[in-house]
Amino acid sequence: MARYIFLKSMLSSALALTTFAAEAQQSTYSVQCTVEKGTGHLETDLRRTVVITDPEVFKDDAFSLERTLGAILTSAVTPNSQDAAATEAQKKLVNTQAERVSLLTSMIRSFRVADRINPDSKVAMPAKICPNEAALDPLKLLTPQDVEGMRPVGLFNRLDLAPANFKYCGEHRIVYAKGDPVERTNRFFLIFEAAVDNPDPQNRPEGCLGIARFWDSLKGKTGPELKTALEKFYYEGDTDGDGTADIQPVIHHQHFGLPFGQVRGNLFVTSGDIGNNPWMLREWRVSVSPDGSAVFVPDTVKANPHPALYGAAATNEAEGFGDLRFDFQDDFVRIHVRELIETELRAQKDGKTLSPTELFASVGARFPNRSNTFESISQGDNDDPLKRAENTGLPTGVNSELKNFRLPQGSTLTAQHILARAGAVSCGGCHQFSVGQEIAPNVKWPATAPGGFTHVTEKRELSEALEKHFLPARCENLDNFLNKVAPTTKTVAAPRPAASAPIQPTPSSTAGAVASSRQGPPTAAAKARQALTRVAPAESRLERLEAVRNLEEQVQTARHQDRQEAGAFMTYRRPH
Image (cartoon, rainbow, N blue to C red; front, side, top):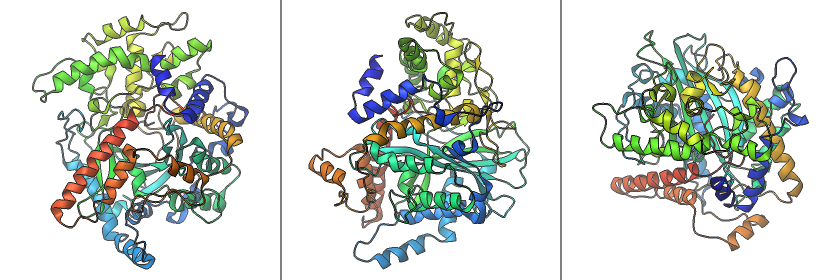
């Protein structure tokens, strides 16, 4: 448990919560998160604390993609502290149809670019050119009434993705899907995954309490009341319904990659050729262009090591790929096997027996970004570690390593189970190729939504994995957080100012005053936000290019550090 003990020493307040969450993962569900007999699903009221699919919420374009892109663009405007009217005028200038189309086009253009280099390992990892996605019309995607238009299909509470140091309060997501009616071989999903800043300058767990209470308060709300509460939360940062902002709005350009958060896509636009255009997942984050405009830039898909790293050497590999494979397979045996069985080891230590749901919700590994690739293919078995590792020495090495651990009595875990877990925590595996695979004896990875390959469909149907396993576990985490943190909470910090404004504590905030008196060196996240403020003031194009380059370096550093940190609710966080 040395790795776990080290991580728990990082922050005292996070220590208590991480320990509590780790213990909770071994327990049965609380009275607050009971599931219905027969279906195994959360009751409707409890379900709304972790996911929203109520059709009434999405009426009147309340969560339209156009509105979300507009909010990203306007939040990127640098406030003029001397002239509020000038700030509002600038926001109107950037929130036009042309600018929203331009922002979405920056994503669409990425489908025609194959050349990609991993930013950490500097090894080339080309992505597949997607000609059909590259031909998508952004105007149609932004028009919900169009047959090709994007429509919101779900809002998801992922407070459980908060890091142990609580620098952000997990992720809060909107999922969009294309097509009405839906064509079986012409599907396209975007998931906006906002990593919402902790409003407490000290990043205490209490700072995230308002967000947790907001989701909990949705129990009992329906119709216009539910819709209004969610709109105010996502687009205004109002968590308690009093008409004032308590946090930065969820939909804010900083929350999608500056430096944390991202946008992911699940792609299947085939023009009928499903063999050459398979289901795949990709990832982007928001950055800025040299002129200061918000843009989407491709990023590696997290927890997705390049599938060839599990296999044997091949001809014509990119320079450095062979060395990367050697290091990856060595690390997989020495480090990642232990991570992938961490849940069983903890259960063994505590004398408890894991349920399948507890295993599904907590299994994970901290794969370094240097091994991550730029796409994850869920169709077929080309990306499946089980398939890739055949006829290599990796399974033998894994089986040998398993003998070094004290597993529960009678455990028959094998390399096949461990490699299946590595696949299941990848995007492609969780979205399809791991379905039905054993990740422990007689424990098979749960099913995706009807039709496969997604966890929420265009008709807002959810997967078995979500309904029976992930959602109850997330409900439990929310309930544990409220019960653990709420009794000790005396103050709630005001929202942090945007990075474009000077970072100062709110005068009325006791927490802010304490933070100011104890201010240490700036964090990697703070450095990234400060780098962001230097792009717009740069006077020449050359200076702006240099400012953007520095911003990218600071963002990558912050994201690298974040990926190495434990989670507040699970030791090894994963995208799904």
